[in-house]
Length: 420
Ligand code: ADP
Ligand code: ASP
Ligand code: MG
Image (cartoon, rainbow, N blue to C red; front, side, top):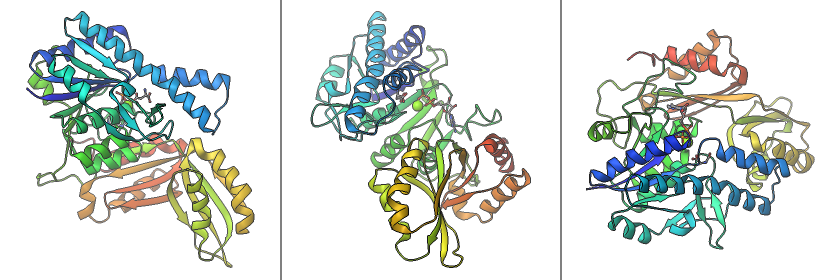
């Protein structure tokens, strides 16, 4: 008997029929003698619908009072799906109980809409498990020290599940989703993409942070920090598939370097359309410039990703960086109002129609010429590279958004990822 956490995403919970299917699958695992905690997402489209209603009433406001209400609102999606799953399980004859984050409690900081989990009290959950119940805990949400409901950022149910698994020292965290594992790239963009049977934690971390949507980055960080065994697998197989076959399916996230002799140089390609580029032009080239620009941006709680500074000419330089698209207008305003006058820079410009494409692989550590192969392949497609950033196991480029799919396909081919 083992304690296992199951997480089901929005599509997997997308209708009462699908919820019934999830209930049958969970009941199968419970019948096999396991203690099961389930972390569901809201039914697909529900979080967007709720946030859309808020937008109809008031355009996004940066103030904290508005964000508090957004969390109060968005968290209801998971509350509904969790209760429905408990009802479906009971209908299957499987005792079960659902809890909202605050009832557990899952304690977070007070950063509304992007809160971080600080602690999880598992007393109540353990008591229910020991009483033979399946326990359902809402994904995506927690509670701050003042009793306010918080949410963990879009896609945050993955993080809830891994955090619960870490806190309870679960045997494994199974992330059930609408694809049957982690692929070399998004199979919806490149049909030739292949499923990976294992992916190293470091590669998964890079892929998630570079925009691969399959796992929220913080869930991978949690898994790494607490060494939570984690697997991504399909919720769309027949629910009564053999449990041992199911337990070995999908993609396992591994923590040890793969012993395989022939490690692929590039394991996957990630892409991200959520960023925007901002350039500060004609900046005097003297010490403290990066700090003056990026310090002001950081003080406004805006995360910066890729950064480049051009060579200076006549004592002036250009400085460019990317931010999340949601922060684009705010960053431009901030630079124009506060930073430009103090810096004596000429102009701020920006481009929200960019995307970032990244190749990821731990094999890149021990191979040379990987980045240049990437650049050659993009140049053969006539794609102009605007920015480059690298780490030990990834190379990212910022390009025009309209070439994204072309770039991903070309790189997938160039690195032989469609070959088994
Ligand atoms: P869930 O609702 O289950 O959390 P998500 O939509 O958040 O599911 O994530 C699953 C989706 O991630 C897939 O449908 C797929 O389109 C996308 N995806 C992006 N990159 C990858 C990848 N490398 N491997 C698998 N799926 C990917
Ligand atoms: N329902 C939330 C979202 O749509 C959390 C999740 O699905 O992981 O972002
Ligand atoms: Mg998700």
